[in-house]
Figure 1 (cartoon, rainbow, N blue to C red):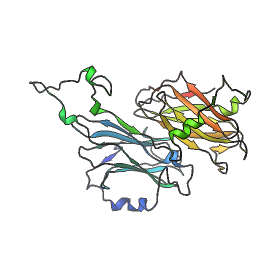
Figure 2: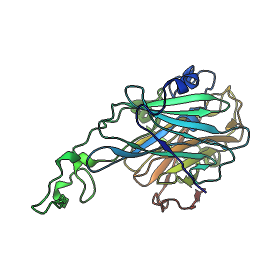
Figure 3: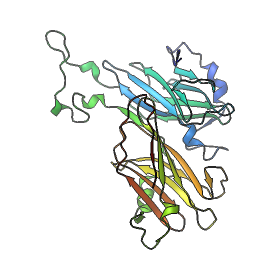
Figure 4: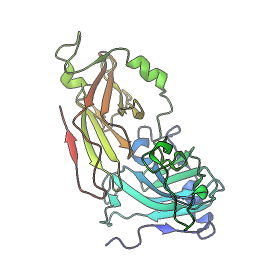
Amino acid sequence: MLGSLVLLCSFCAIARSSFDDYKKEVFTVEKTGKWKGKADSHVPVLDLDPVKGGGWTAQMSTTHVKTDTHYIAKHWVEDGDGNVIASQEFSPADDNPLNAHKNQTTKFKVAKGTREPLTTYAWCNLHGTWAHTWEVQLSHWEDDVKVDEHGNEIKAKEEDATDGPKGQTANMKKASEVPQNAKVDADEINKLKKKVFTVEQPGQWKGKATAHVPSLDMEPVTGGGWIAEVTTEHGKDISNYIMKHWIEDGAGTILGVIDFDINDETDSNRAGNQVSKFHIPRGAVEPLSTFAHCSSHGTWSHEWTTLSLEHTVGSEEKSKEEL
C-alpha cells in the first residue's frame, strides 16, 4: 500500500520554521564534519525531466541502509528563496518500493517559475542532515511550442533535435547531477590513469589482479538508474592499501569518487574488504568502468562490456557482475 508517497505543496504550505531544527547542523560532500566517509549514502542525488509548458518532474534519492535503528527519516527540497517545495517522511516500517534498503526515493514536481538553485536535504536518524545544492538551470523554453492551424503541436524534426533524442529539442534536455568528491578533479584522475593495470594486462604485477581489480554489484533504482557497489579484496597496512575507488561511464564521465583513509576502521574499509557505493543516473553511457588505486601497485580497472544499463521502471531486476 503506497498511500500518499509525497507531499507536494505550494511555497507557503510548509512553514520554514518546521525544518529549522533539522538545519542547525548540515553536512555536505565537501563538509562531512565528524562523519567522514558517510557522504555517499546520505547526500541526495537529483534527476529532472522537463514538462511541456514549463517546470519539471523530479525525483531525489539516497542510497542509505534501512533497518529499525538506522534509516533515512525525511527528504525535503528547497528552492532558491528557501521555500520548501516538497517533502517526504520515511519509516523503517514502510514496505513500499520508494523506501527500500539502500534506495529511498521522493518524487515531486518543480513548478514553472521556481527560483533556482534547488537544494535537496536528507535527514538520517543517526547521522543528521545532509544536503546538496544543484547548479541546474530551471528554465526551459517549452513556452515556444509551435502549433498548427488546428492547435495541434508541431513535433520537432529529427534533424532539429541536435541535443537529444528524436522529437526532443535542445531546450528540453533532461537534467541530472551526481555530487562529486570535492578533493578530486579530472586532472588528478588523469594522472592516476597514466598507467592502468587489468586482469589481462597486470604488467609487472603478475598475480596481483585478484586483490586489486574491483568487482561490481548493481541494484536498479525505481524510475531508472542504478546503485552500484564496488568492492576490492585488498589487504590494509600503512604501506600498502587501497586509496580510491571511482566509476566512469562510456563517455568518460566520472560518476563518483570515494577516498579510503588508512585510519578508517569501518566495515567498508577493512583488510580484505573495501566497499564503495555510487549512484549511476538514468542515461549514463555504457559501458561502465570501475577503478581502484593502490598506494603500492598503482591503478587497476575493469570495463563491464556485457552489462546493460537499461531496466524496466519499477522492476525488481538486479545485475551482479563479478570477476
